[in-house]
Image (cartoon, rainbow, N blue to C red):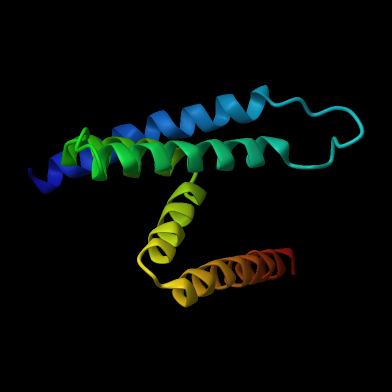
Length: 127
């Protein structure tokens, strides 16, 4: 499988995932007592995590996905839908492999550095 084909599969899948993210996020109601809570993002992230878990099981335990299908679906579609699913899968893989400390460190590092980066980016541009 060539590098160009890899890029094509990931790119096409990313397009599909981004369009799905936009559509699913728009379907979530934004009214009511909890209207300020980002339910659209939550829905996309949880759905993406469930889907990457199912895809990983199909690929790893049942050999139902070819390497090309994994690139398209898991990296492309689900990466375009939400990178949170990759974060969840990688954290689960660490924990499953007996790397509890690394799994916890992955969670803390992503959350702390992610929030710090948002703050820093905002602060730099808002000046």
